Image (cartoon, rainbow, N blue to C red; front, side, top):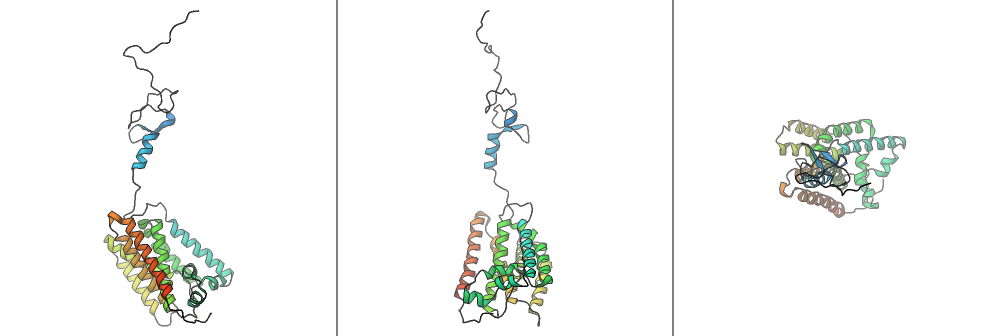
Length: 286
């Protein structure tokens, strides 16, 4: 038996390339960006050829996430709108099963907030409704307006708009409603969506005549003599929604997110101050 020294590539002959991550694997495929050899496990399809996992990761880090025109993340489905609709329906069913007990515990009432400090009612009341027509109208309005606004603003900004509008309606009611009255409904938030649709429509220079007519009709119904409607929730939600939408739509692009966050925080702080400074008269508990 004879032995021979290991063969080496002769002059002009190249060694078989191996994957840069798996040296034991021979490959003749190279990354289109860095030109390193890559095996099938390290290949990622690109517009032309393949790229290695490291180049793909580096490109992903360098690519800014796509944003909406007002700075929110692009969304596939308006999950916040659907979630609010679902919560409203579930609480309405629960309220019917408890014969209004949930409304008594979580509805908006000036006396309970002022005397007992039950501030949660300022928000929880916006997820409750009296009667099937009440929830049908608010659900229809949310279904019509919510998805488009959520797609333009993104999940978080849309949720902030909705909750702040609801809170704005409750705060105005806290100042002017009869303490013997128990109020429920998403009307403040819905009027906030009306206002936001108007403001954003103006910002984008689209036809807003339809939403103007809708707002006028609902305000006329609100103040029509004999209607059992909380004008404070409607007007408070409308004003708050307009302010929030203006802050989101007109924030300068160069510092959009910080300005939007600061504006939303300022609106929340102002509403909180209005709750705190309201004179605490000795209201009767209903």
